[in-house]
Image (cartoon, rainbow, N blue to C red; front, side, top):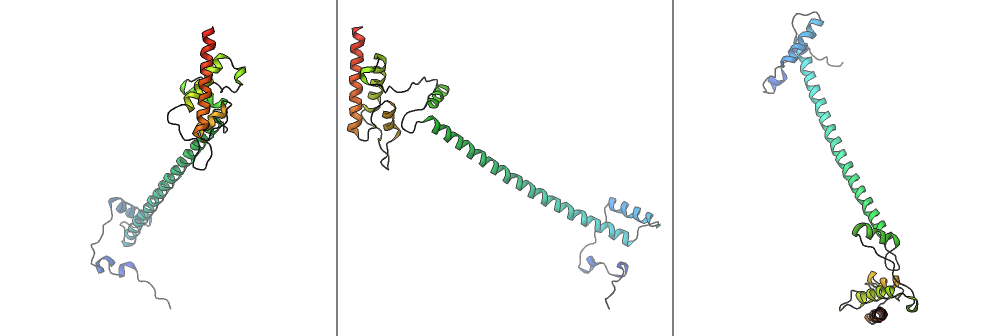
Length: 211
């Protein structure tokens, strides 16, 4: 047969057995124990009433602890979610910037119409497409523009790299395509474009001198 538990008032105080000091109920717990006793028809609370109030205190502490743990977990989850959102937003912004840059640059060289508009918007520069006409069809102003570009890009003392590590033309070299010239891969080819620019500028000056 199962052993029947003894009534609490017949058992010794477990805290005394463990050598610990007894704990007292708070004023609110005492009031609650008295109310419980009155509902049961007793003038004063007994041991069971006091034990019930002490047990409620432990339950309340446990619930509070659980709420605190849930609150901490919720905050940690919220921080992680916010961090992920920031990363996604940064990636999207980077992708949009890269896409916009790709649209503004002509892959064959120079800027697209969208790229020239972007420069005008950001820097106030009014860029125009490169002159690709034959020399015989150019106006004096077009001769001056193309000659100035050719000397400025390919006539400088030290040229920037014309090809990258894989042998593909750099953006500097590809600029020649936007002006109707073959894309240079060697310094000699770049100097030939610069020499052509010098001839165009000389011709422009002669035309202007005549009047």
